[in-house]
Amino acid sequence: MTDESPSNAQSGSSTSFDEPQLNLSAEDVKPAMEAILMATDEPLHAADFARVLGCPVEEASRLLDELAQEYDEQGRGFELRRTARGWQYASRGRFEQVVGRFVTDGQTAKLSQAALEALAIIAYKQPVTRAQVAAIRGVNSDGVIRSLSVRGLIRTMGEDEESHATLLGTSALFLDYMGVESLQQLPPLAPFLPSQSAANSDDAAQWEQRS
View (spheres, rainbow, N blue to C red):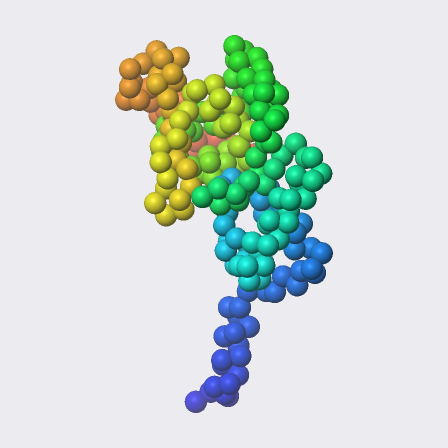
């Protein structure tokens, strides 16, 4: 027999598992939507915002429409675009030539270290999503992925069944640059990884220095 009454047990359960309230002011809802849009690499539906912000779907949809209209009226270089896949930020169409020049500027030059990292991850783990690339690199990779896409080194490979995120893979042009006919001919990664014995030796050396 316990001292806890059924009502207290139920209350305790509610306190343990209920998510904390956001307590956003009316003025903070739109900026919160902008923050979410900046943090995601995939289109979002009004229902996604409604679920996170705790507001009706109709209200979220109305605020998204207002945001898109505000950007249009302000003549911003980007727009809030709604497609069949959801809402997302995009460069405004009239600046496509400028953006294209920026992305492809120095295309004959060597890839940056960040681009090489992202390309290696895509090549060896494909098909892979943007979020997975970012998780492995530990940093947002949207910019370098766009650059690799414009250069024709990567391509889309459908959608992930669970997250519906776009899957990425390498292109035929990538194989041409690598001088191979298939992904199976890519060099194995194992020789470039530290051996277990070497890793253990390093750990032992570090332990001795601390002792």
